[in-house]
Length: 270
Image (tube, rainbow, N blue to C red; front, side, top):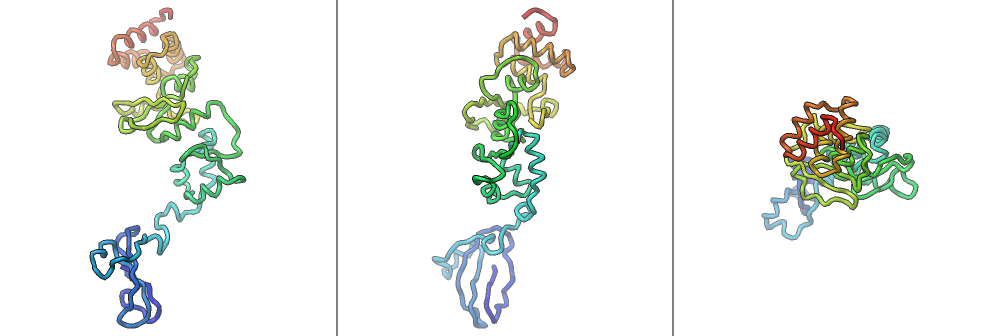
């Protein structure tokens, strides 16, 4: 508990709660030594009849936020550097890593602020020039840059493995995120088995499935055979995937996928 007293001070003045951030209750009390005090007790103190009807506050209301992130000086250069690798976009959770609180984000999204609010939890540098496929970057960041990966037709497009034109932004997320409600224009695929480290790469700051994983996912999802064959041959020609890993990855995905990849690897006509 904490006593906040005028003179004369109470002997308990300065004793802090054991857990910063816990709920406290405030009760006005006249200490034995005289003077006026406000007594702050942990919420469990509500069991004491003395505290009936008191006002409930948070510890941070007394001494302010305790975590290092909110107290650190904002690193705008770091945030701009990160966003520049993401077509000018950044997620609110990324901004917090650079010391920008929710209040600072709100301040900088005013009419003349540094940022534009693209959607809930997603921002863009106001003066950053437009770039191709930035809608893909925005969708990926909104879904969660640590867990989501651009995949299927969208990854084929980013990797320039085929001339497929995606009808939406395709993202693969872990099974734990299968209940996610996608934004309009976004298709969510659930990975029953989490993506392995060797199945994920970075391209221009964006997390996406590797060439081999992209081709196998596209084949299994029913992307046109001619596009899968072209992507397979292009990936092998450019050294982005080997025939062995493509053939091995196709076998567990069923006969149709295995035959399609075998056809592509053997150089058959589409």
